[in-house]
Amino acid sequence: MRLFAAVLPPDAALAELGAAVAPLHALPGADRLRWTGRGGGPGGGATHWHCTLAFMGEVEDRLLPELRERLGRAAHRTDPFTLRIHGGGRFDGKVLWAGTAGNLDMLRLLAERADAAARRSGVPMSEHRKYSAHLTLARSRVTADLRPFAEALGAFEGTPWEVAELSLVRSNLPVSGMRGEQPRYEVVEAWPLGG
Image (cartoon, rainbow, N blue to C red; front, side, top):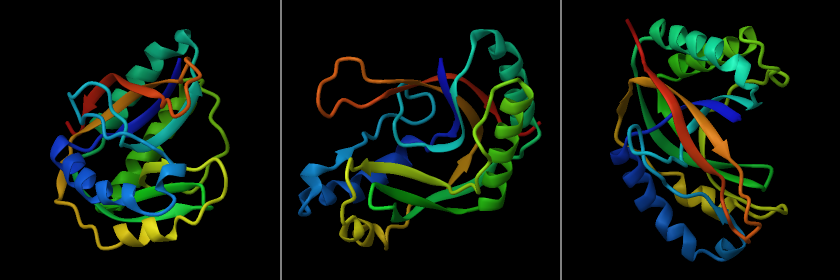
């Protein structure tokens, strides 16, 4: 199954972000973007807006027991910390995102621990890159001018919330072939942070 480790913002944080993103759909060019949905936060079932910590790709079933055990230990060794959704930006004219602020050192540490847990479980991880915390809001198949969208989000400051768990999320890729269909994400398991 296709998996990643993530931090899921709570419903209140997602609602705040949703209110900030809604007006962006009226900007010129918005209809050419593939917008991600809000989904639900921890305990809310399917989720879309999230902070990916470690993308694992296809993981063999035989590796899951050890992966679960190691992710549980990574969560146990990491104390809860505070984040907020903050501002926005773009990657290469293809991805529009919302950023994060708060205890980013702890978020990076949790990402490193999730990555290490996957590697030690035998999951072939891609080349290690510098972690950049964000929530993907929209994608473009071709390079687009995402500057107006990112600038509109620039002043956004979400309410701080406590990151209290690490989630293992399954990514179910679209199968219908319908234009605009998004992957479906479901939480496989979640572990509370701290001892």
